[in-house]
Image (cartoon, rainbow, N blue to C red):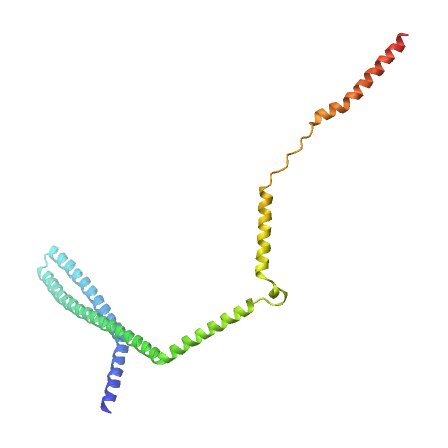
Length: 220
């Protein structure tokens, strides 16, 4: 009983740790941003103290210039501490992001494995064989239906295929014989101009005879 409870407790703790990673990362980034702002502020303070020390040096106020340099040293010490803090925060961010990526990868792999296992459990060898057998049966039934629909019925069922093929062969032989026969010679017709001349020749002769006759009458 205790062994059954322990895995669930560990799994619950892992889920809680994974869910808390994002808020922790947000807090670390906020802390890093705050440290960077403080560092920039202290750097401005250092620059200001250096400028003051220069001014006091020009005015021959040595003590005031030294005090400015002391403040600058204090600011530099704080800046160094802030830099170390930032490095630590950076290190924590990198480690946490890496751990989160590892956890997400493991969870994804575990989910995929569970999905495959569930699919395998839902499908058995008997189910696969039954599905294949049913598909083959349906295919055979469909083939029989198509063959039944393709069978000729009525008048077309009484046609003799051999007789039709013999008739087709006779038609092909007749067509080949017609192609082998020589073509009849083409009839040659007289040219149109010759026909016109032949038709007009008697008319021209009759006109000439009439003209000769009139000339003879006028001479008398």
